[in-house]
Length: 248
Image (cartoon, rainbow, N blue to C red; front, side):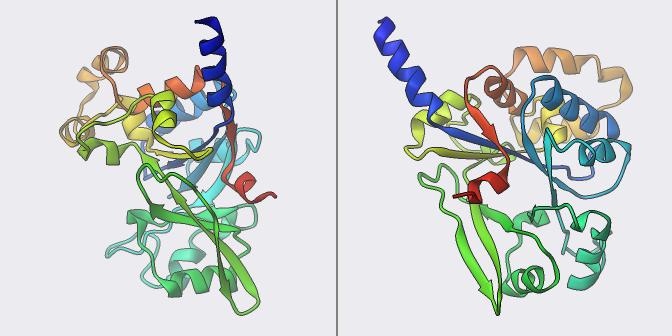
């Protein structure tokens, strides 16, 4: 039994976990909860920022725990702008240090990739969600003399809301995927309330201050987004930034 346990631990330790988070205009309290948990557990996380605030500033200034990416919103009514240039220019304050991008709503189009290649120094774009993808392989996207890597990811908290058998434990997810790379995406609001369904998400969006004490019970008594993050913190997996996937 001991030998079997050792073999399983060795198998799990060969997996690499890449934590990512779309900040999604979360409240300062929600971002602080997420940021503090990452830091206190000495994890690495690539964040895709949507706005500037005191909490996002703290993450930007903490390269030991956070790799910076941008989360451009090309949808109608976007606060980032109405054109490709305006939207990307919104992130000018962090473009020098940003490593990659993931678009809001996971919108993909070639003119977007071309623009990133020609006008930024970003290394990768990671808007392709492929649930439970076995092998993650960065794909080179070339535009003239510039290159950006397209990278898929294989788990996202709110996408688990709609599957028949959601997975809220990293070792269970690892057992379903034969490849070594697990790229997970979280949202601060789902971590804050440990959301596990669309219904609970809608409730958490409208929760008032009187109900916030219930959050502790949600974190303790139900399985959800925070359960997955906690399982990673308690595991022996090697956490990496997305840019480390491109290092040969």
